[in-house]
Length: 121
Ligand SMILES: [Cu+2]
Image 1 (cartoon, rainbow, N blue to C red):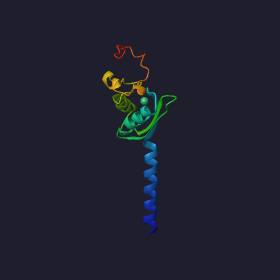
Image 2: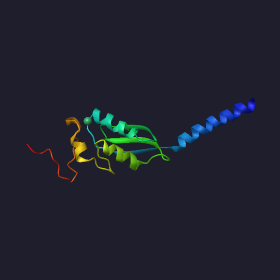
Image 3: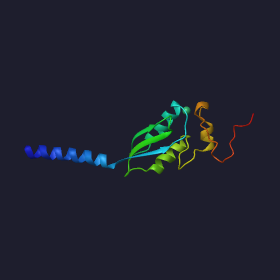
Image 4: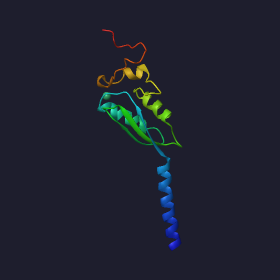
């Protein structure tokens, strides 16, 4: 009976230490404006398998993600976030996706050296 308890306890401790060891936290910039952007960015990041938490700060425009290194990478997360319409250091959102964002979410993209539609009257 005692042995069984010890084995059980050992398994629990081992399990938690592995879970902690695998989760890595990274921060990178994601372009966006408002609370809707925050929801969209975090939803996109969390949709990536292996992502544990995702928190985007509206003021600093920094996304903090913790994820299991064995399952995903910063690159993959940035790619998925960019696909949702928000530029990341590694990947740019496609123009057609960006153009479909609600008006309040159209973040400043002047540093992107691409022809931008939408300046026509
Ligand atoms: Cu927004």
